[in-house]
Length: 383
Ligand SMILES: *Cc1c(COP(=O)(O)O)cnc(C)c1O
Image (cartoon, rainbow, N blue to C red; front, top):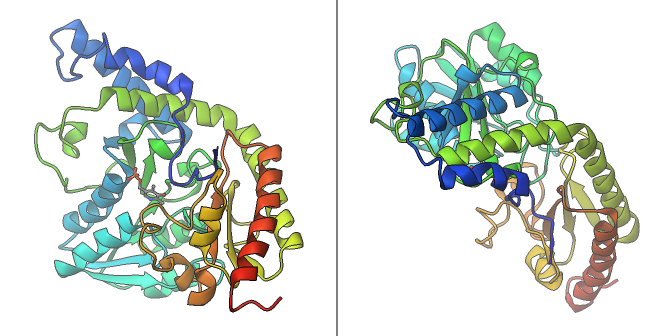
């Protein structure tokens, strides 16, 4: 089985596992137990990991809050800012192709009386910064736009939107789960005030995420308790998870200069191989403004699910892990203006560290064979 679904999750890097092991065994202390060495060892490990995570995005360690997932980081950012700024306004700006963690956080705020603008995207999945500017009003308290889309890989113009947010004095959050570790992400270049990330999308463990929160920004926490993470995320720290996240960030930073161009080349090879050898197929997302390893294709006249099932030895998907179990077309593709019948024939291929050119060549070969076979069975296709 060849794994090519790295946007859904990634395998745990063996070095990350190795770094975590002592904290699952002998270093089991509670970081809040400051009276003995068990606690102090755990505290030091958490704080070292906080520095490693911060360093990957050019932030200060004290600006990082550990959460139990990026879903939680998105919820904390959006609801936390909304609740803390209720006296200033009730309007939030986001876009139609956000991850469900963002969309459903916004939906839940609508039930509380907040107003949300869901900006459209163009055929590449890009948000127009001008649309953001026009949507800002007196009551706007937050803009939340994702850095990279997990289905089509499109990179949003975050720095441009950040500049607009800054000029207008509106807080700006980005869900950067699919960007961090894959492309250089530096807080200093972006004018973002809050940023979400997740360990398991970058070869770290599941169940650990982080929110970058610029100094001085007030949030109302989702979870109340003993006041961990500066009172913003109570609950005894997931020490092994945090240590693993830190190590994963350190490794990602080290590998990025070689992995980014390598994956981009592999993806370009895949796209070329598919578009040149198969008729009636389109690449979804922007041709260049996309994360290195992601390709998303729509094959006319066939069902994406059928194609995926036919490619038995490849682990690929039709879209996000959260929506691919329902047989509905992807809301991301629909928002990009792709007709339903074409969206149905979509598959997402996400290359990662373990993939090589030989595997990509084999996938191209299989896609050519299987698309042709499935089309022969399709009543809609007459050659
Ligand atoms: C995976 C993902 C999330 C959720 O991350 P979890 O840590 O699994 O909760 C949020 N946003 C994007 C863009 C993602 O790809």
